[in-house]
Amino acid sequence: MPNKTALDLSGLTILLSHDRSGSHYLGSFVRALNRYRMIDEICNEQAVDPISNPLSFFGFRHRRSSENPDYALRRRPDVINALLDEYFSFVLEQSGGKRVVVDIKYGHVHNFEIAWWPIFRKPFLFEYVQSRRLRMIHLSRWNSLEAVISGEVAESRKLWHAIADKPQASHADAITVDCRRVFNQVTLLNQQKDAFDKWTQGVQCQPVLYEELTDASGGAECRARITSFLEAEPPAPFSSPYRKVTPPLHDIVRNWPELAKFCRANGLGHYILPVAR
Image 1 (cartoon, rainbow, N blue to C red):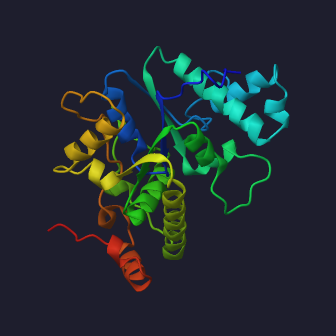
Image 2: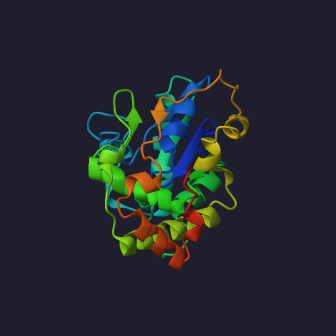
Image 3: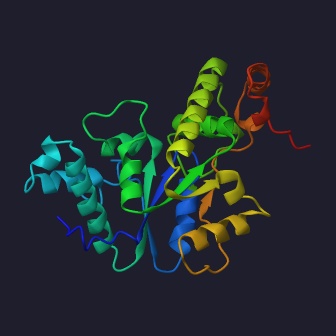
């Protein structure tokens, strides 16, 4: 275990985000920064394989448990703090002197919990981040309806990113949605965003909206703000290899008039953007 008096995690930043928030777009920008490394979702077994990829949090915990069984058996605060100290120190050691941004989704935060934790209390990860003075970028998407539909389309196509030869969704990929289900998903996402906004208070955190990050006119200013927050050097003119997967909602949702009417009648009308003519 690292000597706590010598522990230095100042080179590490947590990217916290929800699904379909544009984290891969932001990650491609981080990779463009000099002396920075972006690490994919450390608790996503499909993105970072726990057997073959040493940076998997699950794989690291499993390997270290052979020497320290508490990592597999105990969930006390001191055990989780020690495990996270070791893991994040290892991530920095494996990054060749570069600073690191680590991707953690809302749905992965429970993997860092201690054994007894009231369900509505601020997750333990935020206490750890605050105690170790780590930076955090909180990326979210203002238009929760678009985020939810993007997830539905991705699940339907089994294709989550448009990069290289992977095509963006087209009219042929249009889906018919269950309005009540979409409403419930949007409501849940908004509740999660509100909770995580609250939990980042007290943490050295840079909030970022997907819409401002990708905006044609304001995106450069947003990226400059991220660069300054990370204490990095501004990159050359940036162009992400990731393209927006989902076309406008009225093109990709077959029953769009029905969904739009339902949203307007149930307090989600602000997510209904004007249709370009």
